[in-house]
Image (cartoon, rainbow, N blue to C red; front, side, top):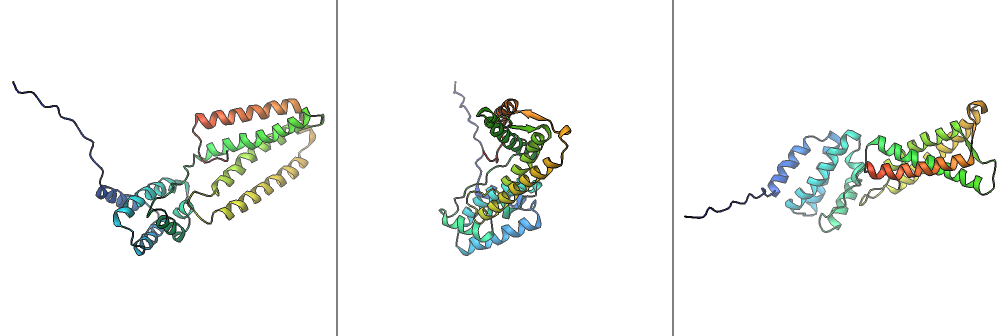
Amino acid sequence: MAKKKDTVEQEPQVTVADKKKENDALFEQLTNKNKDYMVKLNRKLEDSNMSEDNKILIFNDMLKNIVAEQPNHITARKLYGTVTDQARFLIDNNQGEQVKPVKRSETWKIYMDGALLLGGMFAVITGISYVFGDQQAGLGLITMILNFLLGGLAVMIITKYAPQPGVKGGFIKYIVATTLTMLVWILLMAFGTALIPQALNPIIPGSITLVIGVLSFAAKWYLKKKLNIQGTLI
């Protein structure tokens, strides 16, 4: 009796042609501004004599990232820098070996993580001052709440302008955005707190402030791991 040969199902191999077809579909999903970016980048890579297959593989990764970030109003230029910078980077790095941009979590996750980080940091600093002898140290209730709320907003802005690996020209924007954000935060806290009546802003004792700060840090690290929050400060 003849033995039946076992058939082994093999996964279909993805070819460059498949990637090209996928690229065409992804390209049609781009905004006009992002289409223009990719067309100009393609021309520059062609001028450098980069192989068509290599371009297809590079564009496949780039197009997926760009399409994924379009709902967040993040353009190709924000992801990869100027066309000239990205072309030079791709050409210089082994003819197309690129560093993918850091995946950024949803806005509400970034906000929550930032609020717990900066709000908790100020609470801990105030609490430590109390522990080391400053018996007057403490934060007003409204002041503490504002610290958490504004801290989350500050981190959202700062992380939005954080430099991406392989993208040139973003560091200056990051420094300017960080400086202005922190300055506005300090001014809002200084003037806002001064305008709040004492009756509405009772002082929380330093010891309790310290506990709140420590719990905020613990919650930050737990939620960052639990929700896999990406693209935050730390």
